[in-house]
Length: 242
Image 1: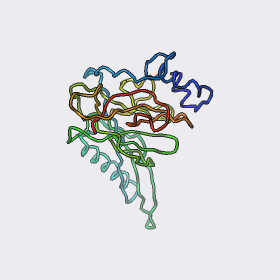
Image 2: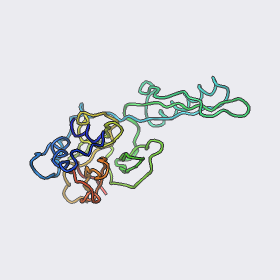
Image 3: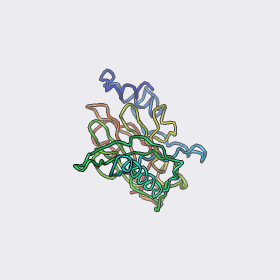
């Protein structure tokens, strides 16, 4: 996708024409018009709803073989506690020795990527925004190591509800963004986040979820402030509960 490749390379060539490019490539609007709110996506069919993908860690210590076995076991136990079957998890990193103790024993880390439907005990959960270096990431799930909490954006449904559509976390060359497209607009799928309203439901207070872009580094981020916090407005993805 042309715009996302430009975002990934932080190109400044089209800085003055960015709003039209954003509308054309990510929002489906006319490039000849000023950026407008993205039309709400139609609710996805159940068969088209993408899965939740979560990284889950395990740790162990002792002699190397014991530490590795313990790391695998604690990782899979943590996955099971989240509602994943072991068959839904694969090793994404490790087992890796992260520390050697004075007695010669080691501490080992392993990371699983689990794909499926985790246990969720509430009908809603909060979508938080995090930041690290030149990337902003919005998720109700655990944030990756190194990301700092910036604050809540609003509340998502944890399952489909009338008038809602799934929201996904996607990535293009290190830059995360949210989308209502299960195909991530041609970019890399990360995980399903939850469900948001396609339009404000009658009699219910909502917050808009806006796609925005920072002027200084072309970084995509989400906001519920209608002026995109003084940055470039790229359209409305949907509506969150407060």
